[in-house]
Amino acid sequence: MNRLIAFAAFTLCLLTSSTVFAAQRTVTLTVKNMFCAACPQTVKASLEAVPGVTKVAVSYKDKTATVTYDDAKADVKALTAATTNAGYPSAPRG
Image (cartoon, rainbow, N blue to C red; front, side, top):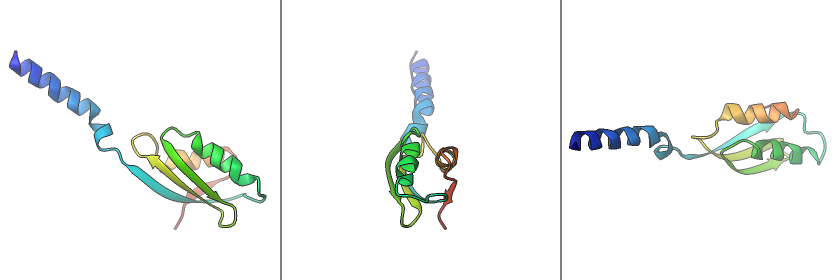
């Protein structure tokens, strides 16, 4: 009986371990096609719609978007896809 409980507890820990190792990450993306002052709002909205994104700052002047996200829920590929789908292709900066 104790072995069964220990096995169940171990299994539960393994299933939830991805959230234990999750971390907040920040990436700066270079964003193309931002030609007017309204463009950053569209870029920001597209990034905020990605699950796991907690903070977005878009600079029209620098043509960048700095994004903070939970790496267990989002990744750079999802972020660049979101901006690209909105008409603003992006890539991680430098």
